Amino acid sequence: MVVAIGLADRQARFDDAALLLGEELRAGSVYRLLAEHGDQLFGDDYFADLFARSRLGRPTVAARVVATVMLLQAHEGLSDREACDRLAFDLRWKAAAGLPVGSGSFHPTVLVGMRNRLRASGRPRRLFEDVNATARAAGLLTGRRRVLDSTPLLDAVATQDTVTQLRAVIRKLLAVADREDAELAATVRAVLTRDDDYATVGKPPCDWDDKAARDALVDALVRDANAALLVLHGRELSGAVDEAAELLALAAGQDVEQGEDGVFRIAQRVARDRVISTVDTEARHGHKSRARTFDGYKAHLAVDPDDELITNVTVTAANAADRDVVEDLLEESDTAGEGHGTGGDGDAPDPVTVFGDSAYADGATLDKLAEAGHEVFAKVPPVRNAKGYSKDEFSIDSDAGTADCPAGHTAPIRIRRGGGGLARFTPWCLGCPLRAACTTARSGRVITIHPYEARLQRAKKAQRDPDWQQNYRNTRPTVERKIAHFTRRAWGGRRARCRGQARILTDVITRAGAVNLASLAARGLHLTPTGWAIA
Image (cartoon, rainbow, N blue to C red; front, side, top):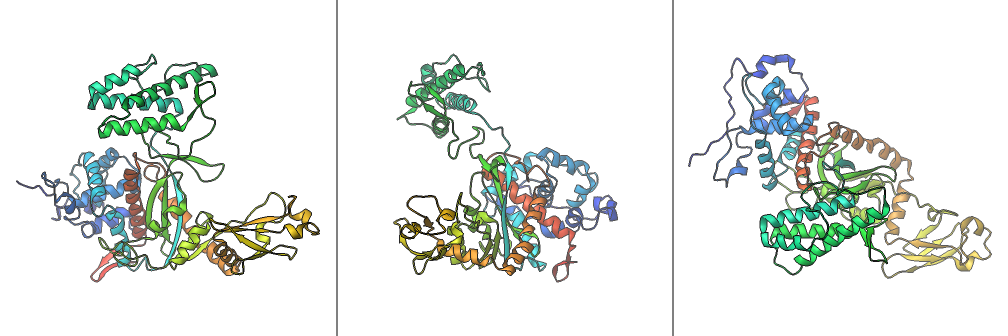
């Protein structure tokens, strides 16, 4: 079998785009950097491992060209077709890819296939990791400080209401059953009672201003869903049918409840971890604050504040807590293609100084980071009471097992089975002159002791230090600037270009690599006889 391998044409030509543009290709731009050093960054074998087991061989598009297009696509926030058009008609792209003026482009499906192969490879983050490896070779990313934060990543689908979801999942089940098992599909259709063949998309006709009509529609949809699930129960189902059945059960149960009259109605609540679309079942409702909500995912970033480069990225559903991915963000690769953490291959990350907002300042996270040797600069939010003295005005000694109230009374801490405890000041509250300013409870003041109270108290004491506050104010805003760079382009930065967490993560990784590469270009990254250097 003959294997076609795409090789970069390194023969200098009079019609090279880089030669034609000359100084018009702006110094300090990512296009100039790729035009001058693309061969060193992306050799012909850069993607060779992705095709090692392919019986079809490798595509005839050179690795440098594909890698350049992927990074510039992320840099400019383009679709696959737009990126391929840029390569065909934009001289800057041709120069960056090392192509002559008259060269053509390739089909957008090449990019789709490359991303799929990257996800399945042993090094799916290579475009990002190798840019950072180049930065380290140039003397950057040597600091031991990291700033963490997240930003909303809006999904690429429409958020669906309950009726739309119920009808869509029944329709999907029928479509899958038609393809996998025609007899099963006929059996399911026989138990459906609504005058609806579930063949068209969207909502069924209904008088949406009539509450009784809406309730009747929801009840009929849920009964059809339950009838279909009863047919499927206990049967041997193929993978696709089983997946559709699970989604049907979820949609039928997350938003509706049965009243005392036996009628199913939309519940007046939002289900925990609610699936918001049957098209992208991993997207979720999220919020950055009580007033600011969004649908989709979160992009989480770790940034080196000294060099203002992204050191790691990951993606979660929108309702995931920022603290859940702290350990993932602190893991970094030392060199291109080697190592899984800053401590070396397979080792835990070396201790760093971590900066973050209050989302990273819960007791469990602070304790976990401290146990791993990290120093943490994250603001523990104050405890607020509706009335009376807050808990922060009590002196708590976890080692001694006591708590002192503002009036100077000392109460023992009674340990609870699940951790933490309670400090009751009942004996002293009756005649206390501060009672009116402390509590309105008949039994007197009771404060709850957190399981990680000692860690929280140490953190609160540290953050009252002026030096701590100055260090936090000087360092923490770095991640906000980098997030602004990251989300400057809508597609791939602020809005997802595709569906599903795995595919979105691939885009986010590439976007982070493009942001870092642009930053290195602006600093004058260049190759010397002794290696990479910054101007």
